[in-house]
Length: 177
Image (cartoon, rainbow, N blue to C red; front, side, top):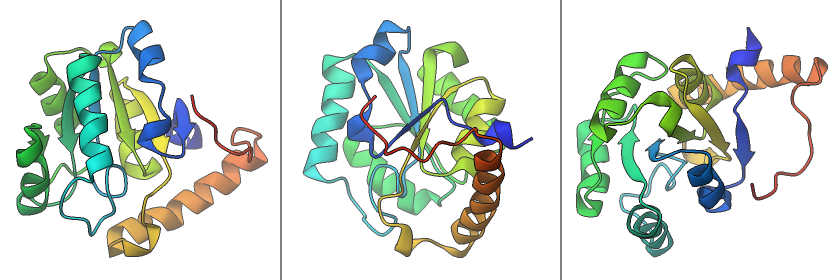
């Protein structure tokens, strides 16, 4: 059961993802979480570094991007609209409906798409259930999380303990992919 929480890839930040390798593997779309994945949960707008990364992802590498967040429309819209990124708010991840909407927005299949997020219980589980390639990043600002996220982190610690006991979650330092 806990194996469904295992991401296909673990990195420290989105900037550590080797997008060229993903493109060589046939990936063309990115479904990404917002809070603590792209920016801290209390950061209202994209950082200059993130804007540059997104421009490179879309313009130079040709990836399509959509944000899927459990947060509300006001939060996600204020972040995504200036960047001209489509989004799905109030996603209720790990439920599949939001991922299906995102795939439809991208016009891509699950095999062509990756999901990037900071939570095993929402992003990884939801992505794996949909057949997506999952990438887990470390949360940017783990001390600024809401009550549901803190509860999910508690469940993640239990799952990680079990995964470590089975030898499925090594403790080595994360490196660039």
